[in-house]
Length: 83
Image (cartoon, rainbow, N blue to C red):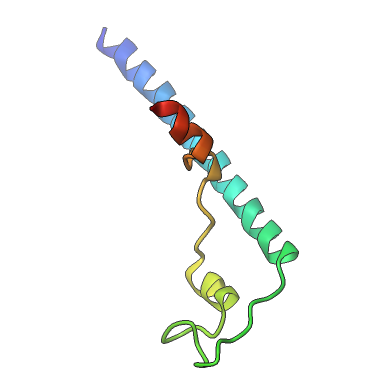
Protein backbone atom coordinates (compact mmCIF):
# COMPACT_ATOMS: atom_id res chain seq x y z
CA UNK A 1 0.00 0.00 0.00
CA UNK A 2 2.83 2.41 0.85
CA UNK A 3 4.52 1.60 -2.46
CA UNK A 4 1.32 2.37 -4.40
CA UNK A 5 0.95 5.68 -2.57
CA UNK A 6 4.55 6.56 -3.37
CA UNK A 7 4.05 5.75 -7.06
CA UNK A 8 0.85 7.82 -7.22
CA UNK A 9 2.62 10.73 -5.50
CA UNK A 10 5.51 10.45 -7.99
CA UNK A 11 3.15 10.46 -10.98
CA UNK A 12 1.24 13.48 -9.67
CA UNK A 13 4.51 15.31 -8.92
CA UNK A 14 5.87 14.66 -12.42
CA UNK A 15 2.61 15.83 -14.00
CA UNK A 16 2.73 19.05 -11.96
CA UNK A 17 6.34 19.68 -13.01
CA UNK A 18 5.53 19.13 -16.69
CA UNK A 19 2.46 21.35 -16.50
CA UNK A 20 4.48 24.09 -14.78
CA UNK A 21 7.12 23.95 -17.51
CA UNK A 22 4.43 24.24 -20.18
CA UNK A 23 2.95 27.32 -18.48
CA UNK A 24 6.40 28.91 -18.18
CA UNK A 25 7.03 28.32 -21.88
CA UNK A 26 3.70 29.97 -22.73
CA UNK A 27 4.63 32.98 -20.59
CA UNK A 28 7.98 33.23 -22.42
CA UNK A 29 6.17 33.15 -25.76
CA UNK A 30 3.80 35.86 -24.52
CA UNK A 31 6.78 38.06 -23.56
CA UNK A 32 8.38 37.54 -26.99
CA UNK A 33 5.07 38.47 -28.60
CA UNK A 34 4.79 41.65 -26.50
CA UNK A 35 8.34 42.70 -27.34
CA UNK A 36 7.72 42.19 -31.07
CA UNK A 37 4.22 43.67 -31.19
CA UNK A 38 4.34 46.80 -29.02
CA UNK A 39 6.41 49.86 -29.81
CA UNK A 40 9.45 50.21 -27.55
CA UNK A 41 8.73 52.28 -24.47
CA UNK A 42 10.28 55.71 -24.17
CA UNK A 43 12.36 56.96 -21.30
CA UNK A 44 10.10 59.16 -19.15
CA UNK A 45 10.91 62.86 -18.63
CA UNK A 46 12.44 61.98 -15.26
CA UNK A 47 15.02 59.83 -17.07
CA UNK A 48 14.17 56.50 -15.46
CA UNK A 49 11.19 54.31 -14.55
CA UNK A 50 12.92 53.34 -11.31
CA UNK A 51 16.31 53.83 -9.68
CA UNK A 52 17.99 51.42 -12.11
CA UNK A 53 16.05 51.11 -15.37
CA UNK A 54 15.36 53.67 -18.07
CA UNK A 55 12.57 51.70 -19.79
CA UNK A 56 10.24 48.77 -19.24
CA UNK A 57 12.37 46.69 -21.62
CA UNK A 58 15.46 47.41 -19.48
CA UNK A 59 13.53 46.24 -16.42
CA UNK A 60 12.41 43.02 -18.16
CA UNK A 61 15.97 42.24 -19.29
CA UNK A 62 17.36 42.89 -15.81
CA UNK A 63 14.73 41.01 -13.79
CA UNK A 64 13.75 38.25 -16.21
CA UNK A 65 10.14 38.81 -15.17
CA UNK A 66 7.55 37.04 -17.32
CA UNK A 67 3.96 38.10 -18.02
CA UNK A 68 1.29 36.51 -15.83
CA UNK A 69 -0.52 33.34 -16.79
CA UNK A 70 -3.46 35.05 -18.45
CA UNK A 71 -5.52 31.85 -18.38
CA UNK A 72 -5.86 32.03 -14.59
CA UNK A 73 -6.74 35.73 -14.36
CA UNK A 74 -10.47 36.15 -13.83
CA UNK A 75 -12.29 38.00 -16.59
CA UNK A 76 -15.28 40.26 -16.10
CA UNK A 77 -17.38 37.54 -17.70
CA UNK A 78 -16.19 35.00 -15.11
CA UNK A 79 -16.77 37.45 -12.27
CA UNK A 80 -20.37 38.07 -13.33
CA UNK A 81 -21.21 34.37 -13.54
CA UNK A 82 -20.04 33.78 -9.98
CA UNK A 83 -22.83 35.86 -8.45
